[in-house]
Length: 225
Image (cartoon, helix red, strand yellow):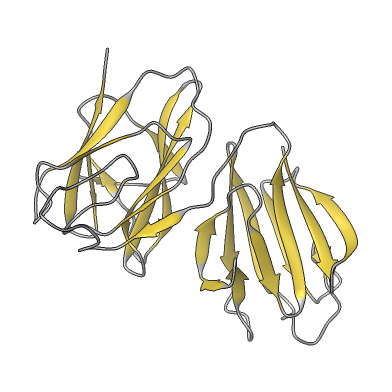
């Protein structure tokens, strides 16, 4: 279960447990989290729970929504992420004891010599984001890039959340759960597809051999028996 800790100038104002599928944030009194400040739009942002994951989406607010100092449109929240709206800071905390690390952006060309992925998830030729935390009992799995400059590259899905794609174009997350791996749409006008079928809901379960396509890149999900 996640919660939000709202503070202003270092002083905690309120704590909100995330128990609903959708939690709205804004200046208007009908929001679930009301921040009565002119820097906050009437309907500023919405938080959506998808299983154990929480996404935040900016609702075209006037002053924007920031996570750890970076403006975002929609992003998966990780433990200890700080959401900023106006002068207010909202820390997201996971209460289940899972040790999440914040997502890191890995851009093309960050490695030399064409070495491809390292244990940190860096890649040459394919922009990726990789984040994660404590492993779960689910068996090991990898994603293998099938086309483009990074064809043949592989990355192990050993973290709780692995986010892949091209920031600002199309991004998806693969979440490791006790019951298996789940793909979710994070960013981009078009949704990723699995086996040539666009993602219809918020998430879809992955099975060995599934082909994921996003941002023009095809990746195969491979899970050991």
